[in-house]
Image (cartoon, one colour):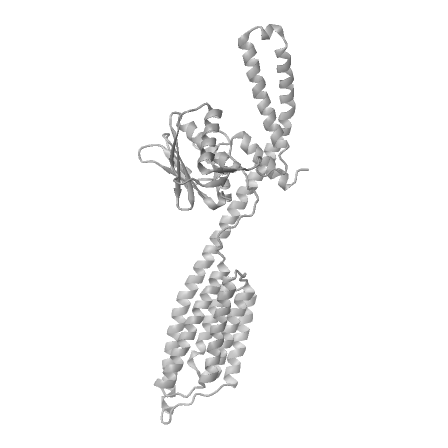
Length: 450
């Protein structure tokens, strides 16, 4: 029985020897950039709370100094200080990398409801027109939380409003202004509506944008999972093919060994040379099959070693020219100061694959450009072939997307994109305006350096 690690190792070796790229890193957990939608939403709640603190300070100042309404400034200041402290705690939690679950968002909204309830109880209770601000918290809850949590917050908010109808500190108006109470209430309702409408429009829109981004990331993860499942199935086929090829290759090796001892065949130098070449080819095929079957546990196939960017590229170009018997490859070095890296077999096989594709379409000219862009290594392969069809550029990196018309073609670039992505890089392809195409591999040097 072949387990997951054995299968990954088999696939790495099979891909390397069959010339369809490298799958090193398959199944390894990388460190993708953190785009946690929960943290983004908690940050929006923090921003909303700062606005609430500033708005309450302005409202209290206008009521106390402008309208002459006596308010309990001490207790209200304590509530404001609590909101500030809650914001600082929330920012500290985000800075430490704490997870933001639905429970965290529920508690944050619940504390906002409690703070608003306390402020309203100190300034007229249910007679305060700013009770409509409860709707803002409920709107945010409906967007951010599950149905059960939203219903819970609705029940708590309703209970809080009921308490405000029974227990509150009445507003004390200046003498002679009691007749203005209803007009002030109407003005307060207008201000409260404007605040509610503006904040709901702004923050719900931003939260919805965060949720859409999160959905897009989940869709991308599903796509990657499907691609890796496809790669695993290819590994099963590779291991099965290796088992099946073992017996006929052994038979061919025995037959060729017998032919080498037959005088009627070895008497001809041309036939003897051809038999020797066939034995070398069979020996190479047997080595490939053996490597596939014995690769369990060897995630990279070959032990990595320290080198430099230029040495790595020089060795790679030499191996590729020797194996393809092709000297049409031109190399342009614009890297600048050399950098020590670990020789990565995966990257070597990726470049082999891209160079092979370019050679198939442009047998007389292939160019490899090596350059450095800040902390990024860029390797560009240019050819003078017909270029990529528009539909291929749109589906770059998807399996079986090929312009060569071969059955099962298009796997090479599919594996290239997946391996480079595992190393934290990107693959870009474009057509040149005067003919040919350019494939650029961009990799952070941090993924290759010690």
